[in-house]
Length: 208
Image (cartoon, rainbow, N blue to C red; front, side, top):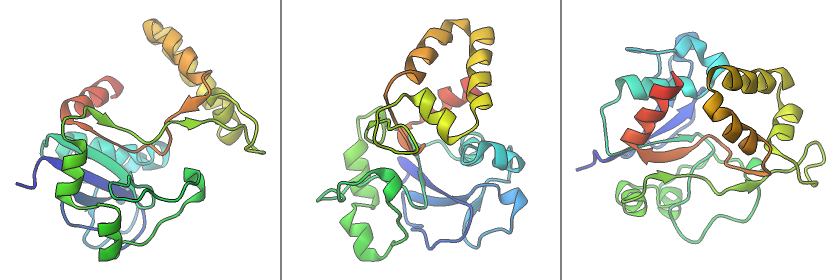
């Protein structure tokens, strides 16, 4: 039965996304925008859809946590960031240099985007993640750097500093591992994963 894994494809604007199992397109911030035809919104039931400008695709993750039927596995991709389950592998290039808008039947077959292929690939795993990446220091993107430096260069320094302070003040047991991670030179990017439902639920119970 096609109910062991569901993978949500997060989008905020219309793309002709695959809608066959295990894929479910979901609109982030649906409460703030025109509904997309044939796409699940994150604004029903228990939701934080209106907070999407602050939380981005996590508003869709929150919706799934609170409202979606439980399956063995749950995953989140983006409309242009997806795992490859087919062969051969995609061309070797950094994830930030790739864009993807092609979901023709031959493309779905090429990347193994069908229920049985995906389930066979992940069955027995706890968590499926993107390849770990070496962090490059912007704006040159050639010299090695740390996750902390990367965030400060690409986003708002105050945010990461405040986050680390809050962790230190409220969750002191986690402060040391947070420092270790943020000052490491490798990380997992794109905010995409497939994981067992109990892992997914546990993460959100801690986070929210």
